[in-house]
Length: 73
Image (cartoon, rainbow, N blue to C red; front, side):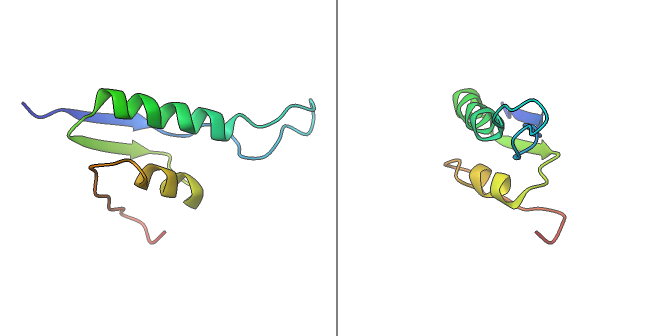
Protein backbone atom coordinates (compact mmCIF):
# COMPACT_ATOMS: atom_id res chain seq x y z
CA UNK A 1 0.00 0.00 0.00
CA UNK A 2 1.27 3.46 -0.91
CA UNK A 3 0.89 6.31 1.59
CA UNK A 4 0.83 9.96 0.49
CA UNK A 5 0.94 12.98 2.79
CA UNK A 6 -0.08 16.38 1.51
CA UNK A 7 0.71 19.19 3.89
CA UNK A 8 0.47 22.99 4.07
CA UNK A 9 3.90 23.79 5.48
CA UNK A 10 3.71 27.52 6.24
CA UNK A 11 4.74 27.76 9.93
CA UNK A 12 4.33 31.53 10.19
CA UNK A 13 6.68 34.41 9.79
CA UNK A 14 10.38 33.84 10.52
CA UNK A 15 10.53 37.43 11.83
CA UNK A 16 9.80 38.32 15.46
CA UNK A 17 6.42 39.86 16.09
CA UNK A 18 7.65 43.40 16.57
CA UNK A 19 4.28 44.84 17.49
CA UNK A 20 3.60 42.62 20.51
CA UNK A 21 7.22 41.94 21.54
CA UNK A 22 7.14 38.14 21.14
CA UNK A 23 9.63 35.87 19.41
CA UNK A 24 8.83 34.08 16.20
CA UNK A 25 7.64 30.49 16.58
CA UNK A 26 8.81 29.71 13.04
CA UNK A 27 11.74 27.38 13.84
CA UNK A 28 9.86 25.64 16.65
CA UNK A 29 6.80 24.98 14.48
CA UNK A 30 8.95 23.84 11.58
CA UNK A 31 10.84 21.40 13.80
CA UNK A 32 7.53 19.99 15.12
CA UNK A 33 6.32 19.51 11.54
CA UNK A 34 9.45 17.58 10.65
CA UNK A 35 9.11 15.36 13.73
CA UNK A 36 5.47 14.54 12.98
CA UNK A 37 6.18 13.74 9.33
CA UNK A 38 9.00 11.44 10.41
CA UNK A 39 6.56 9.65 12.75
CA UNK A 40 3.96 9.24 10.00
CA UNK A 41 6.66 8.08 7.57
CA UNK A 42 4.71 8.42 4.31
CA UNK A 43 6.01 7.09 1.01
CA UNK A 44 5.39 10.41 -0.75
CA UNK A 45 5.19 13.91 0.72
CA UNK A 46 3.57 16.80 -1.18
CA UNK A 47 4.27 20.18 0.40
CA UNK A 48 2.43 23.44 -0.21
CA UNK A 49 3.44 26.97 0.85
CA UNK A 50 7.11 26.10 1.13
CA UNK A 51 8.32 29.60 0.28
CA UNK A 52 11.53 30.08 2.19
CA UNK A 53 14.85 28.53 1.16
CA UNK A 54 15.65 27.80 4.84
CA UNK A 55 12.40 25.84 5.18
CA UNK A 56 13.16 23.92 2.00
CA UNK A 57 16.59 23.01 3.32
CA UNK A 58 15.12 21.80 6.60
CA UNK A 59 12.63 19.62 4.75
CA UNK A 60 15.43 18.25 2.58
CA UNK A 61 17.02 17.02 5.80
CA UNK A 62 14.26 14.40 6.18
CA UNK A 63 15.85 11.01 5.73
CA UNK A 64 14.79 8.57 3.01
CA UNK A 65 13.26 11.24 0.75
CA UNK A 66 14.39 12.74 -2.52
CA UNK A 67 12.95 16.08 -3.49
CA UNK A 68 12.10 18.11 -6.52
CA UNK A 69 10.36 21.39 -7.02
CA UNK A 70 8.45 23.03 -9.79
CA UNK A 71 10.17 26.35 -9.14
CA UNK A 72 13.78 27.45 -9.53
CA UNK A 73 14.65 27.83 -5.81
